[in-house]
Length: 333
Ligand code: MRU
Image 1 (cartoon, rainbow, N blue to C red):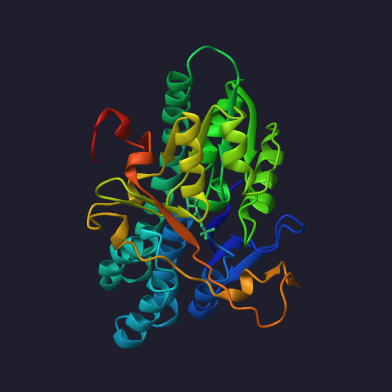
Image 2 (cartoon, protein in one colour):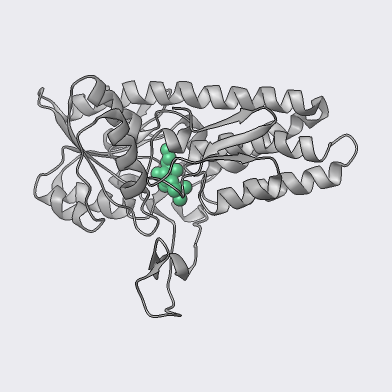
């Protein structure tokens, strides 16, 4: 299913905060509502944020015509661009679309549609290329057991996904033994969203708590770890959902391939390395509660980095829509 699109003058998207209990479509006609939806993760995942940002610029132009009130348009665009800092796709796609504002809403929409279509094509390409690489790295012909984190499926990209597209392609080829998503505290994208998508595709899976990942890898429970990315720096360091670094250490310890699957739109050659990536801290409330239920005494302080950085030395390879970069063989971006 397509999880985000422009429909009759507004952005429509599946509200990811409501899943898996409800599949609710949000219709957004105002920029502040889009910004709030991005901040609370109703729409999330790097490529989906890029598409939402691109359509957001068109939305801004429908509300504040850049020809007559450029300052209000620019302020609205800036609020979308700055809604979340780590995924490069959001700022990048806003910056790609905005210069077309002089052409009016139609020009902005045409470019946003192009970005949406590029991400759809990228997901298909990553799925095929990634599945081929997994088979090559694992060898033999036994079905694959693939550990993954967060949600990297159609919800995160518009359709199909990145790392989860590889898992879907393996499943469609009859080569998936099982997917092993980690629940992904604090917001449970693995437990709520990835399991939901795996159910939709009829793929075998078992859910685990985050801390079980490295141990199960050490016990030989998975053949490969597949993650997405929010930003891949020029040296290959990769920002992705918090917990990815732990899985990379666990994979290295177990001698299991660790693959980053991300479109070229997530590769940021302007960021030299992982130290230069801004990591969003979402505050203590999300740590001290689960889905609104307190799990710590009231007022407990917390630290809540939404992402971590996996150093390139722990990444076997990057799979994009255009290429495979084998960091383990000394290749570079
Ligand atoms: O905070 P989120 O849910 O937006 O984080 C998303 C991730 O970390 C994904 O793994 C990443 O964006 C890749 S999505 C294809």
